[in-house]
Image (spheres, rainbow, N blue to C red):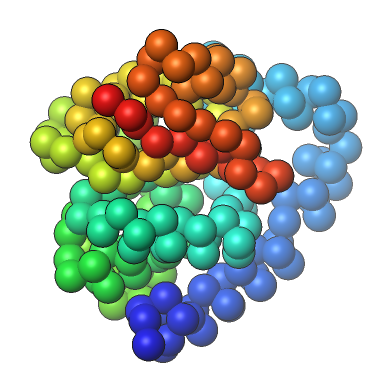
Length: 221
């Protein structure tokens, strides 16, 4: 028995993933008509990320089911009590991480999102999963919301917000990552600057592409 696969979280996640698949942005002709090259440029654009993601505010844009399970497993494996998440959206990845905290005996998950309507939906989902007490939601740009009042030692961090900001968000949080901390970056190929940094051994990380979507990294020192 664990919090992730049993009620209320297990059935809730099944429903939320099904809803996200049914309401995918690629089903919207306006978004689907954008070329792959233009879409990649928009995802890597540090100047226009607010507008790009605001246009997607009605979409969950979640991690995959497998990545969600990976998040839970990693958080359990390292005994995480302190987690930071960049990119709340509708809270699907947050549910996985908070479930791990519950099963680890408690802790604190700090997550951030600049779109108020997404925060409202995520709060409702966390309440439905009875996990709200473990999660602190900070509204605004992550480069500001994560710049202060962080735990002394962060055990795990998920990067799943605006891809162009992965390197900057890591820099904002880096001093609080404990030795052995795990970093999961979803779709990190859209931030070459991030990959270049964590793949340079001189910067104190060990990393590898793990599945098609994820860059899995640990901090060595």
